[in-house]
Length: 98
Image 1: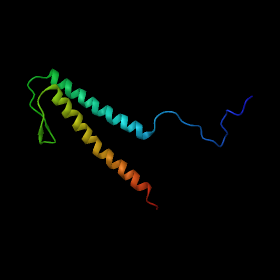
Image 2: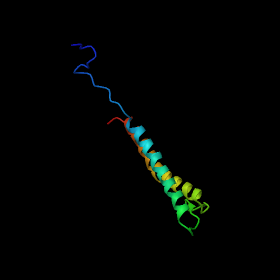
Image 3: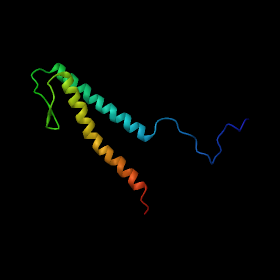
Image 4: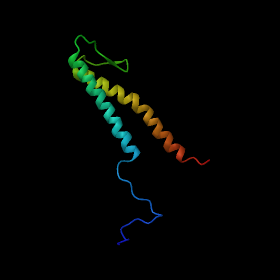
């Protein structure tokens, strides 16, 4: 039996797949994309919608693309700001010694 290719008991086998950070980034863009798609479909199928105001300031046109941009940007900011704070705090707390 060839034992050269088998990992030793004290060695950790390498895991395959994505890291946690890659998964969160992919999930972030997937959620923003899903919100954009939902906004587009809403603007396409629902008649008589009023123009959405992004951050209550910037009016978007009441078209499918306007609703797609509104949905994607809103979700990106609502999820992105807390995510950025978590990343900042996690990097900052790793450098503090107890």
